[in-house]
Image 1 (cartoon, rainbow, N blue to C red):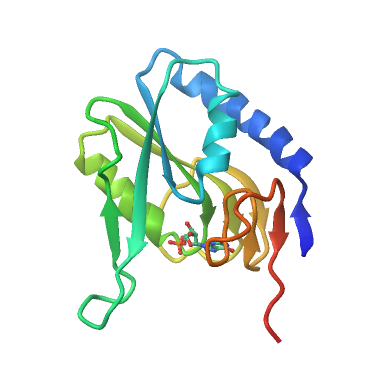
Image 2 (cartoon, protein in one colour; image 1 turned 90 degrees about the horizontal axis):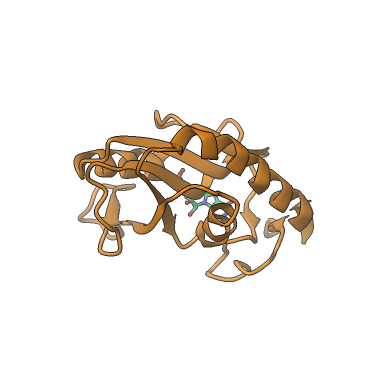
Length: 171
Ligand code: XMP
């Protein structure tokens, strides 16, 4: 598979993001909420670069399947989410594609009483966003290709790769 972003470049950029994020939340109660499962590598690397007090939460978002539900509707699994009321939340995801997932999760976190919700994604696919969601921190802009590695999967595989690679299209 063709490497799109090397492991070294990812680590360098995660460090830069930490430099931007840290000062924003100094002296504010911060919970970083990672979207399962794709954000786990990014979450683990980013929090270790931040030298501010913080809590970690996890949230799940899965698409409804079956004819009875609205196509594209999302189910938010918040069982693992710690209390975010009266806390500032930084929502962390692997990739922004159409924006549907993050738009709904941002709303959910506001509904739970978060003081503020900002969004950080490792990757943003160019020209794909159709849902209106504000993204505050972006690691890399990437072309519209299906990518795997560093948390991102195809059929739940390849998440463990330390780099981001392009999955070849089936011919
Ligand atoms: P939306 O459209 O809600 O999609 O912004 C975000 C979610 O879609 C998945 N996704 C990908 N997963 N490689 C992946 O492994 C990709 O290129 C890709 N594009 C979208 C991912 O789960 C993300 O959270």
